Image (cartoon, helix red, strand yellow):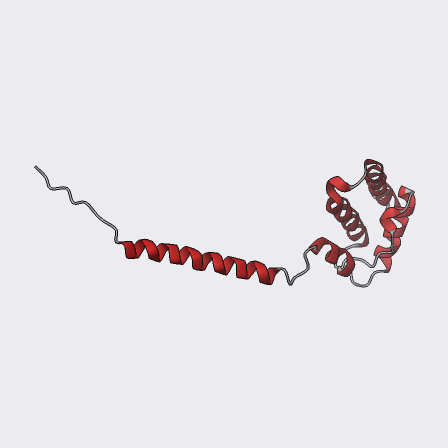
Amino acid sequence: MAHVRKTTHSRKSGTHKTARRKASARRRTTRRGTKRATPKRWSQRVTRESDALDLKQGVFKLTSPKKIAASLKRSAEHSSRRKTGAYRSALSMLTFYINRAGKTLPKIQRTRLEKAKVELKRAFGRE
């Protein structure tokens, strides 16, 4: 008959693992604490400080899709900080705003902004 060796774990190793878990948990809470120092709403900061465009205040609240498109075009063409073409910058900011608002954006305003995309294409002659 073969002898089966039974392995036993010492209490010390079990305690060591628990201590490691506790230390790990402490590190995670420490990281979370330092993370709070950075802005919580990064998309708000991007809208405010982005190198893409200098937007007119309240441009996305305008009632006419044509006015929104015209304002975005004006901002894109006059911006000295953008890294790509005027059309692409303007469309990117419009899309960014729509995506950032997500489900909280009222359906009427979402429709208006989607129409503004079409108007932006027309304004830049890209139909």
